[in-house]
Image 1 (cartoon, chains in turn red, cyan):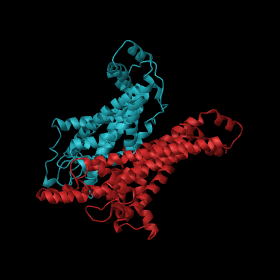
Image 2: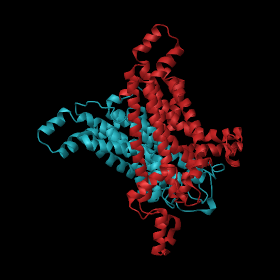
Image 3: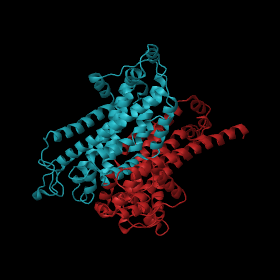
Image 4: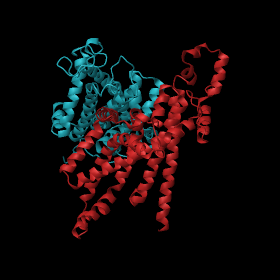
Length: 326
Length: 306
């Protein structure tokens, strides 16, 4: 490659990494402010009304234990420091270390998220392409129908409906035996993950479908496609090399954005399908007002979302040289 | 759901189009007629009309039965003339409960949309018109809030504030502010140098007057479209929160809570799941399609082929 061009790529990536770090710092401040500085703190959460019975000296020592008495800035920096070194604190309700809890829950959510993303991209790109290549035909109508369902039917309605239908008609609810890992019983694990992932994937699939359809339609009206057709390039090659490749940037960007929906969706779907993942951990911790866990899981979700979108931008600058100058 | 709407938002910095002429946005009957002329707009108007009508009927006390009245002799009865959506495990009329749930849901969603739309529109206008440090600061803050998946942000805020109606509305609204900032800022960037704005400046009008009398009327269209989409997202988010047990506590009726309660009943009393689900789906699709119709009606440039 030419020196100047690869230099530009490195430059663009460096700028993107820097802005990601700034965003993540901002995210940590926002979450810290919401969960630590708003009324109600770990002591009242832990002891409830009993907090009122404590002597001032006891309160002070508890404050010290939870690190509440210090000025906000000091609390923030010490929390950030320990978080960055991997010390996420101790759960208030189970007294286990937060990193242990997250370590157990993360693989479940990761598996669910990856399967849902793959399904969503397959559904979205497939139906979007079908709709764009033959607008107004039956495939297009199917796509539009899926889009409306994905847009209008919330994942918890779809999930509850599907669970009820399968368990009442076919007595089928693979999660009833408790979660099994992929390595322990692969077939049962696949069944446990497939339906929640399908529920999640319809929502993101709808958005990816509409993006794909619009992007492919736009590309296919351009003259280079007509030229390719005119010089006898096969239909398949046109679809893959000309249409899809040029529509890839919006599709990839959209998929990255939809990850936010996916992460929020895991919270709900894991609840319905009783999967012991991060979302379920988050809801349980909210019920117990277990602030260290809520804080860490929220930060983890946001960090994942931000990092993936950074990777998406970097990927786009490799797919499309024009994206580097933005 | 939430983020399905994000695809319509121009990324910050892009979507800058020079707007030279002050475009008249149709109002009143003309606007309704323009929305009615597109298929999605028609569906949106009908669905939203049904939802608002339902909330009004309950609001003025015309619901068939008091939703909180328990009738031990009519537990889990199926659909009939006296109980349009059947009854639940306490013998309450599901139809009346759904109407009440729609009312609560609309109340929370409207407050959330007012919060998001109010703060977001002012932020977008300031960021677009003033530029410089104010713009950078606003856009940075927007990016940061945008980086936290909206439903998780709502969960965190509800954890801190508690599950009241105003708390839920705030929790849901905050996550939507960045979207309003972005969609409002894009056209304002173009309007900044439009002739009629320059003329206002030359005539010595105050900055406030230019902002509110000349710029603001030109972004009504995008704000209205976005408000409709925001309502759809807010209804969805409210239902999700209450599904997780984090909405307003009983006896406040709530559609999400009803879906969650029905999960153990639905296998033999499907109407307990169907009633609230239909209401949520009709509301969400209605406001989304109304937003599409409004967009087509107010902005000819984005009019779609179908």
